[in-house]
Image (cartoon, rainbow, N blue to C red):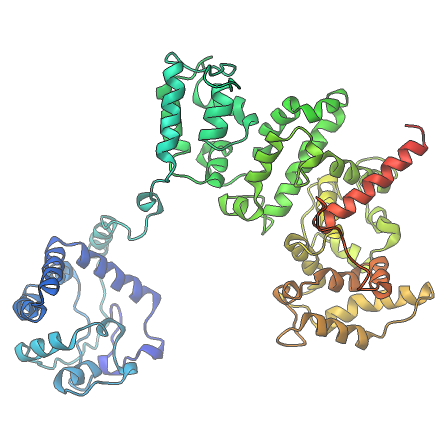
Length: 557
């Protein structure tokens, strides 16, 4: 082995001697070996011989070359020799006896040698045992630098950009670009319309942006300024931009490419604001907000909060193409671009949902300083949350507050809380509440964690005269529901697989919902499958909006 003195007879694949450094070194040598012209020529000859049925003869011809003039020797000429095998080593036994050795006695690099090649090699090789080296093998700095230089010239085995296959619709997109600029040879402006067809669509927004790039139309002003600083965009400018930002990329990658500054591979909170400001200014369903500018910024920041809640799985503040695909963000942007009523787009953009969130925040913010204290949040849902749960939230366990005021929850922090509270079945909500339940942060909730939260629920039930639920009974009920592999350790995945995570978290955190669960008849619980509201959050927001609207009518607004 490189850098270590070890007799080959003491090595075994399961002994833990194959270190990461050794594996990297062997991979490096193999990549150099396989990229040499001599090696590639030998591989081509072997393929041709295999097709012709003369593979054995070709092995016989190449055996002396492989032994005395192997391309691998040219790579290793500057490398210290590795420890040779002794006659008692498994490999020497393999060459000297016709019986097949045990699998555990064969090195991983030897398993693919054909038996016919072994027989030809055995007849030409003389195995002279060489005693193993006793001193550690070391490399000088010059030798190491030389090896690193050679390695840097080896092309990577996997390069996503170089092996990415062109999209099937790339030809169609380029043809559409050519067609647009045939009609506008001097360049396309933002308001130029095509004369073909009855609709006369806008050339830049409807054709180049929506059809070719598959991006929302309200991205138009941003994209136009990215491509050109003039009033017209020429064909050469657009094709150059298309090749850099759009070509051979899927919708999520294109979305990130056009919004992320400095060629970043991810989006942050502020990167979503510019296109949403354009949406606010141009969408016909949001004209009424122009009269109340104080709510415009809150509305678009609520949209971004909902996007980050759904897509930012690790609370890093960064959203990449993979996150956009999982949360299906791009299709929601395209949907609101094509829909006149923003309230019909329940994902992220519904103004009614924003209205409900803001009214809930305003009700709790009694001094109206746009900040919630621990006492303020405890009043949520008619004091349904346990004090221990609220304490964990204000310890910033599930998420760090962005209010900038220590110990106070801002509006954007409240958006995350209410999304998690009113739909505990979605995965982001489950992560939020599981972090609260897992007091030591080891990835499991234990009986001690369950008892810590549930004993407060028992006391509250006793205080209001509700039938008391024994700790052991509640614990057994949750174990039966979750069915974890080990009863004393419940993970997030265990709760998620139960398909009833809301019941688990409501049992230990939310008194009112716990009582509803205990009194509920499971045979009467149903919802309209044809309704647009298909998740707990959408249904709750619909009911709350109708309630708030009725209150406004009663007050004469």
